[in-house]
Length: 72
Image 1 (cartoon, rainbow, N blue to C red):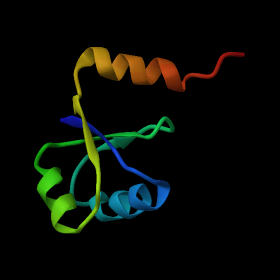
Image 2 (tube, helix red, strand yellow; image 1 turned 45 degrees about the horizontal axis):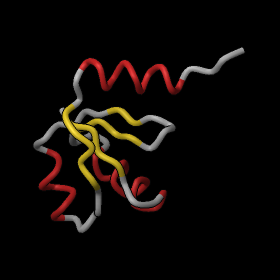
Image 3 (tube, one colour; image 1 turned 90 degrees about the vertical axis):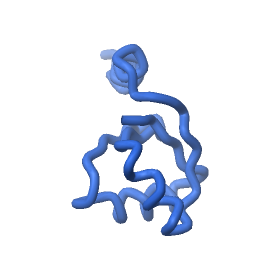
């Protein structure tokens, strides 16, 4: 699994619509999306631009979870 980011909200919406039902994944309000590496060529073939942020390591996922929690 890798973390990717889209250049704008429209690209993200289009990509998530394409990925749904084809590949597992997770997206966060911070703009990062986690997908399997196998999904990357399919996104590129569809002409959806994205940037690979890096592997979805435990440390990276923990940081994303911490950022999305709201402090009360």
